[in-house]
Amino acid sequence: MKKNFICSLLFAAMLFMIGCGSSNEENNDNNGNESGSNDDNNSSECTTGNFKCIGSESHYCNSNGSWVYDARCENGCDSSTGKCNTNSGSNNNDTDSGDSSDSANNTDSGDSSDSANDNDNSDSSDTSADLTCTTEGAFRCNGDLKQECKSGTWNTLEECNYGCDPVTKKCLGSTECKTGEYECIAGNLSYCNNNFWEIKEKCEYGCDAANRQCLPEDCWTTRIYLCGDSKEAGFSYASYYCEDGVWHYDKTCPEDCDKSTGKCKAVCTLGEYKCEGDNSMLCEDGFWVKSKTCPLGCNSSTGKCNDCGTINGKTWSFPTSASWSGAKTHCDNLTLCGYSDWRLPSISELRTLIQNCPATVTGGSCGVTDSCLSSSECKNDACSGCSIDSKYSKLGDRGIFWSSSVLSDNSGYAWYVDFHYGSVGYSVKTSPYGYVRCVR
Image (cartoon, rainbow, N blue to C red; front, side, top):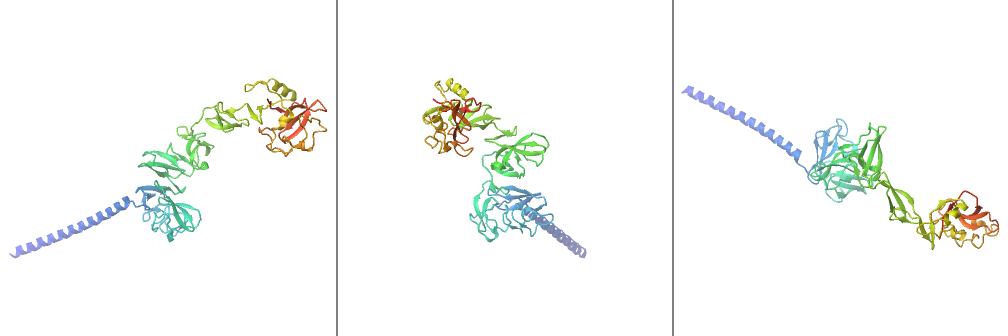
């Protein structure tokens, strides 16, 4: 009997110890599971404005509830704030006016990723005390909000639907993208994730979307071209080339950049002409460049300057260089614009082309006209014209242009207009210098 009782006690004690051990193990398991669950929730929960660490990168939660890359942390990522440490081994008590990876204790006047102490990221005019700014007119990204510093407070200008670029302080681009596409947006390498653009990498020297990389500071192969963004032209498409181990800006593309060649896509065929107002444009290297300004107008059918045009009721030809005798022969034999009745203009006709010089325009105080051709009696001080190199020709001419009028007191000389000065003078007929515009 006594033996049975002792056995019963021993059996009961064993059951008690087994039960306690099981309970402790169960508690330990539960504690472990709860801790793991919390970690999982912390890593997946996305509340707009929050930050988290993924390896050595800081990410923030945008307004669509998605984690977006913010910065690569050279000194490690602070798991308590989700932001980059500002220096190796420490991130406390730093004062920062523009870093995109501040710690929770930083004082921030232009941060693109505010600390957890900011109370409100959605107010259109947030004037909380902890949002004080010091530089009037400065911009920043606060999560997905683009904000401007006004009167000491950060005011929200725009909520960026596809993320805010903390480098350029601009909202990211359009929804017109397919998942997996890469593009250069605001100078940064961006990729399309769930049909909206996110920053893949911040590029300091430009961006090469075709090869999915930032342009390196240095390069080693001469004349390799890459497409990127042009900071010179406000982040338009541009072409860059490598020379002497350095990337150089080539040109801003008028339309797009061909990623297969790294050069701007051609917009015209070599040698073509077109008119832009009174300018004749020539296609060189696949792009339009100004050929010349057309004082007589541009012919839209040819894209070139008109050969003749009407000024003050008379038709004038394009200019050519000639001596006086050569000018007269040229006009007498000219067939142009369907006409063959061209002639060398008289001095009064030539003066109708002068502008901006009151003394020598038609009716001005200069005495030389078709009815007064004497060098001693008709030429006065007013005929000397005006200052040098002003625009005294209605047709944009410069230099001496011959008239048909000969000096009445010396037939070896002929009158001219010098459009450099807007002056009226005379020269020996045998001079090899001068220009002519024929008239009819």
